[in-house]
Structure formats: C-alpha cells, structure tokens
Image 1 (cartoon, rainbow, N blue to C red):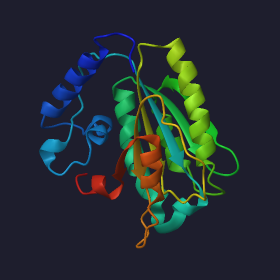
Image 2 (image 1 turned 30 degrees about the vertical axis):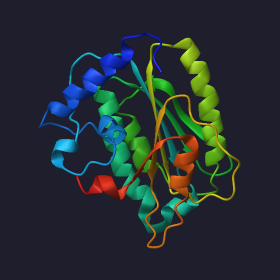
Image 3 (image 1 turned 120 degrees about the horizontal axis):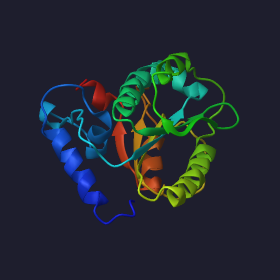
Amino acid sequence: MDAKAGAGKQNGASRGRACSAASGRVAWLPTLLKGRPRLRQDLCWQQRQAKPAELWLVIVDASASTRRHQALAHTKGLLAALFDQAYRQRARLALLTASGRTPQWQRHGLKASAALQPWLQALGAGGGTPLIAALEQARNWLQARQRAHPDEAVRCLVFTDGRLQHWNALQPMPCTTLVVDMELAPVRIGRAQRLAEQLQADYQHLQQFKAVD
C-alpha cells in the first residue's frame, strides 16, 4: 500500500512493539487486523512511538436491520475504542455511514477528535442498506486519496450485519480490509462473511471481541 519501500517493515515493527506490551489500552486496530484474539497475549497494546501517517477508513452499516438484538448498540463500544485509539495515535479518519437511501460521509480524512464520541452516541439505525453504494464510493475516494498521499498507511474496516439483498460481484478495496460481522440474531444468514470473501478481506464476528474486552 505504501509507496516507500521501507514502509511495510516500519509498520510491521510498530505492530510488533504494540503486541509486545502487556498493559495500558488495547490497540483494537492492529488487534483486529491480526485475526481473532483467543488469549490475552494475542491483544495489541497502545504505543506512543512515532509511526508513519495513518488513515483509517471506517464504514458503518446503520440500517434499520442493525436495531435487531441491539447490533448497532453493541458495535458502538468497539467503535468508541477505535476512535479513541485514532485520536491518541493522531491517525486520520474517513468515516462513512450506510443508512437510508444513500451513504453519508461523516469525515473525509480529518484527524480524529474527541468530537466523534458525541456523534457516535447519537448515531441511530434506520432506513435501507446502501452498503454496496458506500463501498463503491469509498473505493473511488480511496483511489484518489492514495494518489494524493502515496506514503499514507491505509486500513479499511467495514461494520455490517450483512442483511443485504442480492448484489453483483464486488472488487476488493485498494487497501487491507477487515469486515466485522454485527449480526447477532440466533439464526444468522451469514452474508457478511460472503461479503468479506468477495472483498478479499479478513473476517471477524463482533462477539469474538467482547470475550476479551
């Protein structure tokens, strides 16, 4: 993803240092990108070392279906931790919500700030699921962003319950991507996992993180 040859090594080293700590705040972004944490030592921890500029693109499905079993409400806890981590690491956030008829940008690569927490608390679920349109918009925006900022380390996180109708085959996002499945119904349709497969993204379920919170 980064234009500089050494960027990958630097990012890997930073994640290694983060994972070597054993106290402080959980660094949820590198933890999620590693895969499912099973033990405490699988968690990554917040570090203060200087690191390359980062952009976290977060896409949140806030459609009416995410009211079921309080899926969005449970997701807010993880989002709050991510936003706090971005603020402390001075990462930039691009935030896109998918609800109603069309996706809505909430942030366009601005530095994370404490103002996101009141916004997150007020976020409600409703309307349709324009998630596919959100992914297309995000992909186009990212491609333009990467041309303008080729040295930026970019990660994408997609939060959805997968309650979508039929959709055409999807192209992968132009960066490392994680799909977090918000579906909490006793009987699950499992479309978020299918979405992750088409995006060539990592997949985790929301409940996997509650066990180690």
